[in-house]
Structure formats: C-alpha cells, structure tokens
Length: 265
Image 1 (tube, helix red, strand yellow):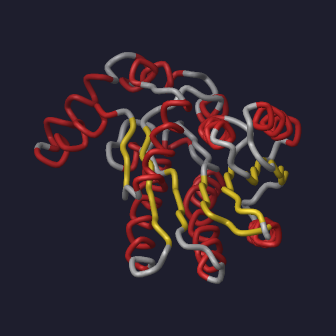
Image 2 (cartoon, rainbow, N blue to C red; image 1 turned 135 degrees about the horizontal axis):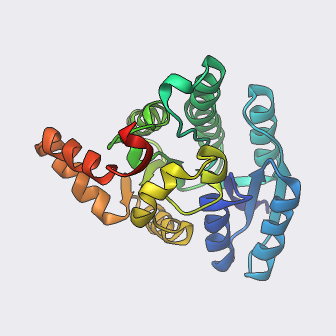
C-alpha cells in the first residue's frame, strides 16, 4: 500500500518550516522542498525528532518550469498526495522607482506564476489519485488586501495569489479538492533578511508582526475545517473590513502608522 504525504514547499525556513514541524508533530508523512540543502536537512532532522512518519527532502529551486515539473512528478511517484501546501515566496520592500525590470519579473514569477503552475499540476495529479479528499493551500498575504508604502509589486503579486485561489476553488468546486488561502500579515522570519535588506521596512511593521508557529497552527486548523481563507492575525481582518467600508480613512491610518522613517521621504 502506497504512503500518503503532505507536500510543503519553502520548508527550509519560516512558515513552511513551521508547518512542516506542525505536520510532523501529528505524525504525518511529509515531502519538504527548499533551495538550501543544509537548512532543509535540518528541517528533516527536526521533523523526525518531532514524530513525523516518513520525511522526504527534495532540494531544488522550483522557479523554472522544468524544476517545478520534476518536483511534482517526484512527489506523485512517491505515493498519494493528500495536501499540497505552497509556502515558497519572495519579497522586495524597496521603492518601486528603485526596482529594475528583472526584480519585478522575479518577484511576480516566483510569487504568482510558479504558484499557478504548481497548483494546477498538483490538482491534476490529485484528481487522478484514489483518495477521498485533498487540499491545496496557498500563501497570499495581507499585503494583497491592505497596501503599504514600498510594497506595490509584492502586494500586486500576492493579490494575484488570492484571486487565483478563489478562481481555482471555483474550478475545483465539484471535485474532492478543497482550496485554502492563507493571508498572513508580517511574520517575523528570515524572509525579511532578503526582502528588506536594510531592515527599515520591518522596523515599521514589527509591532504588528506574528510568528510562523501561529500561522502554521491557523493553517492546520483551516485545512482540517475546509475553510476558504484565513487572515492572520485577526486584527488585519478588522482592518480589511474597515478598508472596504471606508478606504480613505483606512489608508490615512496606514500612513499614520508609517510616519516614522523612510516612508516620509
């Protein structure tokens, strides 16, 4: 009898790593992906110590279509895929005027186009499996709902992920596959080491940040309950509702939050 796995991308750090540990603590079989072999192997080791069943580590940069296809085929060759949880992402919190075309293209390709391709690939594979229920979970962002200074391209890419998740859910509505979209606010992870090299952006949002463990717990609950989407932490959900009711007031509050530092330049 073949094994059943939860597949997690971006598992060498941040939300993906925290979710891998969450699944491991529940005794799940997991397939984890990341670009950094050393960190991914550390995730694998810790997951085993937490009580995971089988842990398979696949080191690769999935940004190219060929690598993404190879990864998907590897997963389905190993067994039944119960859940596909896509945590891989890229950020760049610099002024739009400073971003070259290559930066914009990389961010959009990584966050949106790769998400689309992997989602459709895993959906197709899941539909061919003899499983009763499946889930595809995508990580969007509060930034796609509530835009801040220096987040224009990142916000647009994550808004695209949110819209794609809603559209994918419609396409799969009558099938066994559920689609969940997670929209976290700022998360205190190494993500910002690359996305915000001088630390100025995160300094302004740090007081509103949550932890990857909190996001992972919310993700696990959302998948179990078959929820469409979850905004984490809850106060961003309140802000999003305010945004819809009174956008001018909401954006004034956002700019008041960013009164300090580079956002006044």
